[in-house]
Each structure stands twice: as C-alpha cells, then as structure tokens.
Length: 573
Image (cartoon, rainbow, N blue to C red; front, side, top):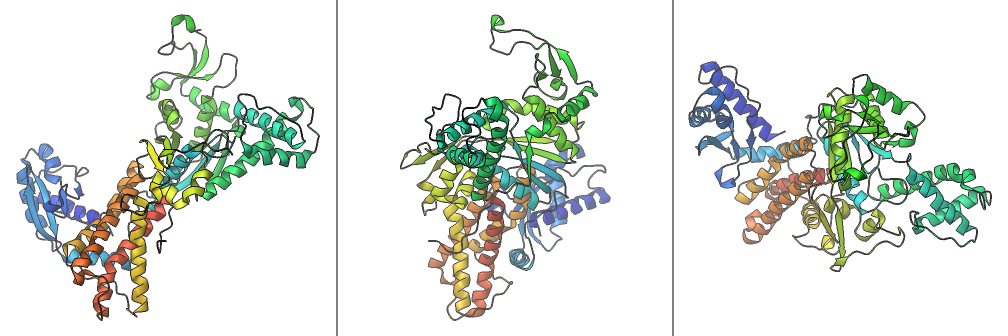
C-alpha cells in the first residue's frame, strides 16, 4: 500500500483521459509528474506539479491544465478538494476516511513500506574494506554502519543485495604487520623489543604473538625474515580478520563475501582485466603531464602503461603499471571491479573514507569501460567522526596504540545507539559523536526520542492486555493530531523509495524522528483532551479503536529501525 503512488496513478489516469478528450495534446511524457507532500501542510495533504511540467510541451498555460485536471480528480471519492495554487500547482485534500483505511491497511497487511522498485536488480555493496592490520577504528565504524544500512535499505526496496568486504592483503602494509607480529612473538619468548616507526605497536598484537609462539615454538627466533615473513604474514592476516569479524559482529554487521586482494596476484586476473581494456583500445604506453603544483625540476617524465580513463569521464589518464614493470595500486582495483562486473551485478556501490575522494573518477571510469557503461558505480564517501566525552575530545585507545576503536565506541554506548547516531547526518557531512549526549533521555537525542515512541506504544499494549481489551484493526481517527500522525505514516513507502534511489539511509533516521515527534505530540495532547487518550476508562471498544493508530506507528518505527540495524525498545530504562 502506497498512498502517494495510488494518488499519482489517479493523476496519470486523469491526464490520459484529458488526452483522449482532446484537452491535452497526444505524445506527452508524464515521467516527471509527481505527487508529494505540500511544502506547507496548511495547503493540503498532497500536491502535484502535473500542470507545471506539462505546460511547455503542451503549449498551454499551467493554470488551464491544473483547472481541467482538478475537475477530473474531484470525480474520485478519495479526493475531497482539488485546489489550484499560484502559477499552476494543484493542492489536494483527501477524504477523511482515507486515514482510517490507511491505518487498517498497515495493520492488516504484511510489510507496509516494502517496495518492488528494485525489481530484483543485483547490487553489490562494498564497505569497510579496512586494511587487515588491526582492529577497526571509529572512521571504519561510520562506513560500516552506513554501508550496512544502505544494503538493508536496498533489500527492503526490492533489490538483491550482496554485502562485500575487500581485504587489502596484497600490499606492503601486510609485510609491516608480519614484522610487528614477529616483535610480539619475540616478546612472548621473553625478549625486549623496540617498535620502530612504521610498525604497529598496539597491544592487540600481544595475543597474536603469543598464539604464534604456541604454534611454532622457537622456530623463528633469531632467524632472518626470509625464513618467516610469508608464513607470519598469512598467520597474522588470518588473526586480524578474525578480530575484524568480531568487531563487525559487535556492531551487528555480517558480510556475505570477503574478497582477498592477494587472490588477484599471480593468477592472471589483473592481466585479464587490463587485456579487456586493451581490447577496447584503452591501454597504451605514454608519458603523463606533471601533476598540478609540481615544479618542472621535481618532475621526471617516464613512459608508463596507462589506462585511457579520460575516455570515460576522468580528468587525466591513469598509470596501471610502473616503469619498473610492477603494478600500481590502481591495477588490482581495476581487476577487482572487473570481477564484480563478471559476477553479473547490475549495479555497484563502494563506500570509502573521505580520504579516497581522489579515487572516485578513476574508479568510475574503470567500471564504465569494463562494462561498456552498462553497470553504474556509485561511490559514497563517509566523512570524519569527532568523538567527545565530558566536553573534551575522547582520548586515544591504549589497546590500539594510535586511534579509538570500534570496540571502544560500542562498549561505551552499545550497538543500537552507535548505529542510529552514525546515521543522523548525511554520509558526506562531518559527524560529532558526544558520548554524554547520545545517552541523554531528551528530545534532543534522536535515538532516545524514537525508541521512546516505540516503548510508549508497547506500554499501551501491555496495559491493554492487562485490561482484557481485544485489539481491532479498525481505527478511530478524528482529531487533527491523529490525522497528522496518519499523514506521516502515509509518507513511509514514498520515503523508502526516495532513500533507496538516492542511496541515502540517513533519510530513514530523519523520518523516524519526525514520526516520533508527531506521535509524542499526540500523546501529550491527551493530557488536555482525555478523549484522545489511547486507553479510555471503562470503554474497551473505544480504547481498541484508539490503540490502532499507535500500533501502526510501532509497525513503521520497527521497520525503519530494522533497516538501520537497530533493535526497537519495548521499554526504557
């Protein structure tokens, strides 16, 4: 059930009838005709831009179209008023019975708000993808929450979603990890060690060093790294991935696929990807211009193997092989995305940290070239998170050595609070995370305000059960505060589709806060008007009808929190 979609269908039917009657010319496209909430709620329940978008192609005045359309719409019993406003917008007021029928539909159906918009389209969402060199930090936390909520949102909107983690285990940083673990291994044997610059000094490697000792004894003590580097590298990477999986589990994140960068090397997969580009005439030998800001004397021109990424929207062509014959960092990334395309995904989404902004155009160009423009790639950048406690910046983690970990955050406030707060800002906007404020029980704390609304409904239902009230799906909706809540419920299916289409799960958090606000306003109105209270003394039938609306609110809040990966609260402590 999607009330906005239903009324839009009504508008399209009316426009088609006007074409048949000759009131509109034939051949018009109605794709840009929208039905949405009016900017000012006082203007009505819905508004359509039909006359505004059709006036120019129809060669008519907007008001003339709007007035004719209004007459058509008024013939439908769902429309109470159709009023032309301004240059040609059409404001609609729905029949009062619509709101009760809406609530009835929410309670009587299954999955209100779920959409078939995605039509089973296969979407790969890659997120987190942190180097396997340590525990996840707070920046990874935001990317993990955003990516996971986006994946759930797309699934809710009818897509077939694969959640994927790209393990960056093919670069030099994993050698540094192996050397750092070796130092902890020596330490486990009672030796004093010094962590040089560039190694990882965090305490999280202490148990890894001990585990290595338990496995190999003193076999590597005093040996050169040619004897142990490869083995410890694999051992340490596996241990770090176990740690990362534990961190993600604390946050309620479970990946479908862990893809190893290392699996691309020595297997011909990088060569295959570049061959595919070469066959399209997009690989050549050339010399790049010096980067902007480089003085000529600092620049050494050299011939390299280049990808002609400018043919697919990039600013400059990109090297894929260095002059010494080794691959650039970009080459395995091309191969990885080629693998995604070959796996048959219809769309790709990458969630990167803010420091990867320079990678966006080249990666989009690569996917466009590899798929002949068939597979879109959307890259979402998550901005930094600043942590505060007691009004001061949150101190670094001793366990991690240099940063605040995901585990630090979740242990402080819990997974539900962490996830919701991380989605209270758009992904590309900086986020302040104040440990004190996110636990406040006030309207200023969105997660509390939404959870409190759900808990209030649960409280009403418990009391109703104690009083022996038999629930009904047929509501009684009369007061303007009740109608305001019903109107907000009507927006849910539309909001889901907008958020899914724009890849913006923060819209769900914003909507839930607005719904909770309208619900709390209705609750408080009952203090002044006893007839609006959900439980009416001695009137079980009236109570059952009043409870239907808050039950519908709980359905939507529960669904929205489910998308965000947050467990709805049944009571507040």
